Amino acid sequence: DAGITQSPRHKVTETGTPVTLRCHQTENHRYMYWYRQDPGHGLRLIHYSYGVKDTDKGEVSDGYSVSRSKTEDFLLTLESATSSQTSVYFCAISESRGKEKLFFGSGTQLSVL
Amino acid sequence: AQTVTQSQPEMSVQEAETVTLSCTYDTSENNYYLFWYKQPPSRQMILVIRQEAYKQQNATENRFSVNFQKAAKSFSLKISDSQLGDTAMYFCAFIASSNTGKLIFGQGTTLQVKP
Image (tube, rainbow over all chains, first blue to last red; front, side, top):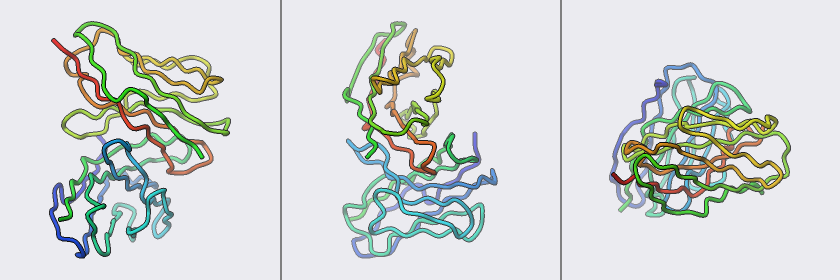
């Protein structure tokens, strides 16, 4: 299995608080992604990174920011959490562009009350 | 816009039988890749099979095979000799070769294999 660790695994927070989710990889892959999974929507891309300090928005990026200061770490921040951001968040990595064989982390269940 | 549609929210099959999960997609791209991912109750996303659009031959991986119809933009997954461990949610996914990172998923099909 690809070395991807997401932390925390579960988190409960209150509306309006900041939240940071961490994705750590040991594969030295260039590309990293954050997806959210919601019933009826499958997985939707939030942000992705194609290198250190190089990031871009996905289809559901509003309310989220990301940072990648090292190859191995990709952080997802909810500046002010809302109930609509209650979801399961997945980090994924891939080695090459275009072929996109993604390896996924185990997910973070986030509940915003 | 590129979209992926899985029209079967839930399916069930008896153990040892064959089941087919449907997926259609919409794109104007000519070069792309299609995937089926499996998500068991553990929540882990597992790549089942991958198809390159420029290859006419359908991909196979042991008991899993696809029926790729490029003109119809259809990409169905066939599971032969179904096993209890195949119980999971299955996602069809698409990516155009020109779109880094933008893997587009269908809504998912929950498959239950019954003993």
